[in-house]
Image (cartoon, rainbow, N blue to C red):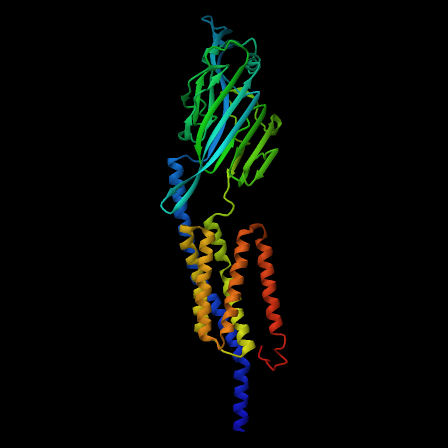
Length: 457
């Protein structure tokens, strides 16, 4: 009777030992989310520090640039008849007429506008951080036609008193004027003019520069402006012409075309990119001319390009940390299969130490990547973790071949993860295939579980 009871107790313990260990290992994997979250916090903190450096360098160099213009502003006066009612000394009501001169401004956009520019990316350093900026050389050409008719269309012909051609100015908007390097050679109708700070169009664009037109001897203006700029991140332009054409090129091979209008023609190679935009008047809703007292939003549509880094360092590390639990799960699964197939035992403490080493991979990765780049840092961090865990498994497993198998699995996992991180568009597909492969291998090695009398699971 006693022997039967002991056998029953042993059977129960044997039956429930494997589920208990499975639950214990699963709990350990969840506990290891804590160091993974701590590593993620470190990555986030380092990323914030980097963003602060980017803002500092952009503040000293120049931020994102947006170019707008030219816009022609022509002052004119209107003679307006005003009817006044008055009472005579005799008490009679009469209506009198008087004339009032009012100052107006005609704001006119060009009939044709073209931007032609080249961007040269540069790298600036601050401590261990590298920040990409650019220098741009732009050629802006614009043509204004039928100016008198345009001004007359904004008011009644019988009210138009005088068009003050000599007071006309041309304004350019620029989001970061401190990025201006050179504007020499600004020509209006073939004559060189000097630019002045401020746009005189604060209600349209608050920052930029302007130039007096001088006496307009013709009913048209042709403007040519070569300008050298410094900026960071992106370069945008506003399509203010009735027809706007833009052409941008650079030796940076990773452009990201931004704004509301994509280029009609573009070419991207390993040597750089070129892009062309053709934007007609009908793409926007604001008019070609309006009175200065009218509120018009010219910022509703824009085009441009961002010098994009395909996968930034901190984004890569953040994405890698998201796979941390998958790393730990697959490694624990490998150890569990070794336990099941060989019949050996690995303590939960040993599982925990292996898991902590796996979590340390991401901390090593971010620490090295800030100095030597992501690729080399990934190789060194993965080699370090694979070697540590392989040597540890060689000490706790009965055969070294099993430790070599663990090392091979870890190497394969790190290799697959690197491929997933670099092939961003196929990340979901790669991760899914990895899980399917892990499930298939697990099903293969556990296919004979019930035949072996293991009914506890």
